[in-house]
Structure formats: C-alpha cells, structure tokens
Image (cartoon, rainbow, N blue to C red; front, side, top):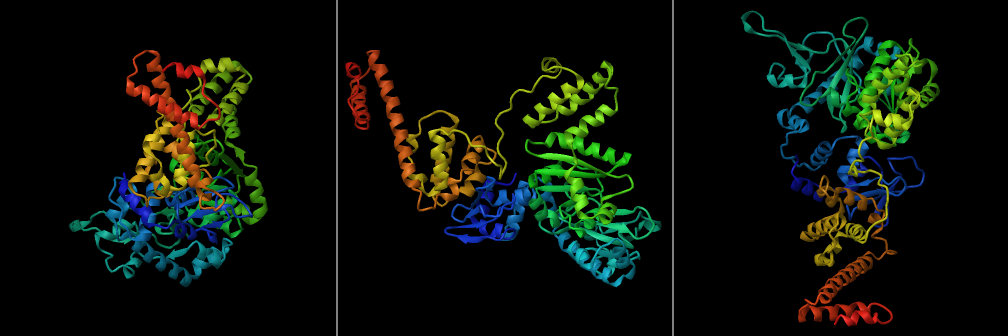
Length: 596
C-alpha cells in the first residue's frame, strides 16, 4: 500500500486545475473553472473545478472527485497508477510498494528512456524504407495517421540497435525486451541480436503516452505475422491495450469503446474516422482490460470475425465480462462476415457502415443465451435441463443486481420455469451491503439525516470545521460516527481540503457516506455569494444541540420519575427545560413541572 501520509502530501502539493487542464481546457468562471464535461456529451459547460477545494463536479452527470479520481476516470488507470502519474509531474518519488507498477519504477529506471530512443530510431527508419512505406500505403494508411500512432520500421539485420545503444551488450538492455540472448554455444558464450527485424513497428503506449512495448508486423510472408514485446518491468500484456492513449477522447465523446483483435484494425479504423477502437496485445481479454474500459465508457463492443475462431474468442470475452459487469454498463458483440476483419470491412464499406454495425451489436444477454441454446435441444425437458445447468454457474458470477435479476427471469422463461421453481434451483443472493462508490461515481441521492447534511456542509467548507463542537454530535449511528471522524480529522489541520478528505477516507468504514456527501453539488457551489454555508452550519449545530438537550432532559425526567434524581440533576433539568422552553412558542405542558 502507498502510505496515506504520502497521498495527503501529494494532494496538498498538486493543483487540480493544472492536472485537469492537461486533458480538458478550462475557463475561469468566478472563483472556479468550468468546461464541457469530458465524461458525457454536452454543449453547455456543466463541469466545474474548484481550486480552493481541489475537487471537480459535473452538474450534468454527477461525476466528481479529486485529482487522483479524475485521472482514474479519464485515463482508465488504477489508483496506484494515478498516484504515480501525479507524483512524476511534481518530481516526487512514491515510497516503494509491493505493487507491480512500483516494481517497474524501482527495478528498471533506465528502461523508459531506452524505449523512447528505440521509437525514434524505428520512425527514422520508416522514412528511409520504400518497402515499408509502400506496404502501409497499400493498407490505405496516410502519413498523418502513421505519425499519429508513431509507426516505424525495424530494418532487416541482426544487430541494428547496436548503433542506437552504446550499452548494447550490457545486461540492462535486456529489460527493454528489444534484444534476445541466444543459448550459450561453444565456450559458454551467448549471442545477442535484435528481437524485431524487417517489421513494421507499432509502439504500445501507457496512459501517460510513454512507450512501454512494441508490436511488429512482418512485411510479406513470414511467421509469426505479429511479434510482441515480451513481459518486462514496464509491460504486462494482460493490463495494457493498444491504441488506448490515442482513443481516449473519442471513447469519452462516443461513450463507447470498440475492442478489436489487431494493431492494424485499430489504425485502419482510425484512418476512416472510427477513433474509439483499441486492441488486446496478443492475448485474450482480461478482467483488467474490461475494468479499465468500463471506467471510461458505458458501452463496450467486442468486434470479432464471424468464423468459429471469432465466436470462440467472443465467448472467452463474455466469460471475463460477467464478474465485472455493473448495472448501467453494456457489453455487446459484433460479428463481421467470415471473410472480413475490421480493417477490410471499413476500407470496403466505410465509416458509416461500421458505426451502424457497432450500434447493432448483440447484447451480452442475447449472445449468452443464444450460444447456450444452440448447443442443446430446447424443445424437450432434457435439453432445457442441460441449458439450465450450463447457464446457472455463469449467471451466478454476475454481481450487478438489476442485470442479474433480469437474466435470471429470462433464463426461467427459456427453461419454461416459473419464479418459484427457479428460486428453488438457484436461490437469490442475499442483499449485499451498500457498495462503496468508486472515485467519480454517479451517486444516487437519498433523504439525508441531520448529521449527513452537516457533513456535506463541512466538506464544502473545511475551514469551518473548527466551528462545530464535537460534543454536539451525540447520536450513535454510522452517519454521526462519520461526521465525528471527518470533523476530528479536519480540525487537526485547518488547511486540509475536500480533495484530501476524499482520499483520506477512501476505503474506510465512512467511505460510502463521505463519497455521497462529496457528490453533493453544494461542494462546488459553496463559494457562491448566494449561499450562506457558515449560517447553515451554525443552524445545524444549534439543531444538534437542541436535540442533545431534549435527549438529556428526557433522561433526567426518567430519573425523577423513578425518584432517584439528585438535587444537581433536578437543577440541570430545570435549566434544560427553560432553555428548550425559550426556543418554543407557548408554555410547556403542566405535567412536565409535576416531576419537580
């Protein structure tokens, strides 16, 4: 785990306006900054960034969070990766952790610069190779699209990179994956040579635009057709996607990402205006891939060839999708004609035809049940029983409650069972505890308690936290406990911001309520002269104190009813009673005085 004190220090030094402005051009709007939201389509800016709170909020879709949360939602990176990105921008070194990402930074500090040197070399070689340029032109690519994706060429020859790297023979270069050491021969010596030779080179970029690996496509005949970088300290195939860096904005604009199988498919689609496509890197889709994409878009379309191999790959993608699906997200499957791949289809049919085909992709539910039903005889009981036995373990993996319920109902219809019969065979899962909202999640509003309302105001104006006496909060529920925890933490340092608070309580027992309050538009509007947050906090504190006084008066009344109240407790009751009476209109009931 990355130490919490480092995260707080990082958020204390970073300026969220600078961070977001790298990706979304912000304009000054009073005390805040605004822009059209990068997370949904809109024409009128509703996305607001507060420099005083170090927080962003969209009044249109509800997206909100601190600088870490923005990078996670915008770039689809993980929490540690977002922290590393921010730290690198500030020149801060992240304390060593046990995560894979940290290992890359600590064990191979020279790999990243070498990968950039290799990219420059391959791009220069492309300009010099008529064969490689003619090959790309023959695939319908322009120089502009080749430059956008950084395409290059690795010339034929065994040790061309020796002219690029002075330390070609050293062990350090092996961490890049650009070279291979042969098995030791006579005398126990091995021979080093370039991994990529006579291939068009496709650089693989991480979320920050750094080169972490390469894919090489052979020109003409040869095997393997595609050759990828091996696993290195920088590159893990199961976590990375080709073209994601270039496709980020288009994915946001379309709220859709298309997953294809090859590098050339991504580039060809982009050439024809379909810019929201990415590709897996010679591996099947992994849960990491899909989780990353679902953070960036609500609609993921897997595009496969319509042959047997394509349907097999699609089924693997479906199985990976089931555990990570959430309500509101859609996974679909597009099957092209057997003779086509995305490259050939878009070149022949054009952008409009491909976009139309993607829009009509078969939803996961249809593909799931159609595939299962095609393998059994649904006209008899035995076939339907087999269908049910195959479907049940798949549906059991779905955690999205609404989708799971609807798929169970559809499964029952296909198996010709009623709800009671299905329940006997496949009991519903017990209701899960309220999930902790992810950074930037769109939080559903509910009726708030007094403590939750006060917590929202305190987070909107952390500088006013010292004005709230902790002893005023006497309720024992989880919302009161969250309020006390946040108040105590903010009162330790008046300079702490709402963005730091969201990070500090991330993963704690109070995370759900803190995230809910952070989603309140009040957080961004608090600086408006039309709002009196300080007055509202004072009113809520007064109400809490009245509630506390009334509760104490009831306790003292009970002691007097039992005849065990001390003179001091009777005096306290009189004082509280007079206090409460003064806040009401009219006289108190006569029976209350009889207890004296």
